[in-house]
Length: 307
Image (cartoon, rainbow, N blue to C red; front, side, top):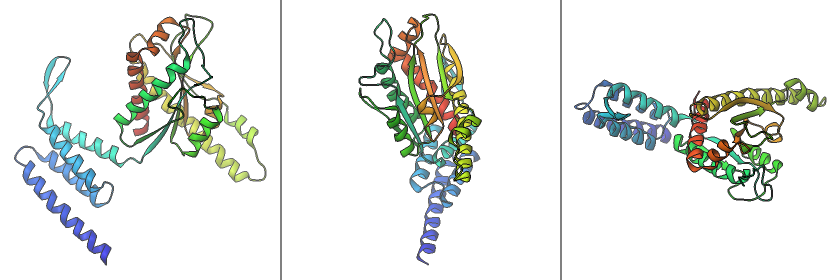
């Protein structure tokens, strides 16, 4: 009876608040904001958002309504307030309703493991760490429901098994390993994304356990699903990276890397560029290059998460 009474009281309070807000907004807007408020009210009552989220969403929407113009490329253009506001509310509500998404970002190498380098003294470990930290910040800026875990946040050595173990123990939703490439030729350049490349049939034969066939089947179904999801996310990342002018994208590839093979979630290894190519090395070492590249990678991950 107490729980029922509390629910009735909550509904009474939110209805009163709704009516107050409606009185405030009716003189300055049309039915779109009222409809948005009704949607937020419903989601609150069915417990998809809490009271704090209700207030934040409404006040954020009301604040954005006060802006009558949008400046783009130096020209002032009029916004359709109604459609802009309603779509913004829906986007915010959708983001709020998503569960926490845990991403493990792995800055390759570190400590005594310098990774690859070139004649210009660009060490891979010194490029992957700042990029990993920048990417984490970008992701959390784009989506507050993302939790970032770093395999290292300093110049220290972390074994491959420990990196994998950290991601699996955290029950992460995504594992992103950051690297830079090198090759004998200085003309090869570009960004690459790798996903686990062992075929499903090979995986089955390599891990078959006759004593527990059901567990074996489920494990391989999960691995197959992770491979497919990894490829989808990698493709979304590549779509965003190709937007960068004069930066080569070499596509999504498959490899049997240990950090991709042994993680229990979608996993992607990113090669930011080639340290043996002078243009690539200068770009991925620069703060501006890392900022732009991290922004596009983050956009790709967010796009995949919301799809």
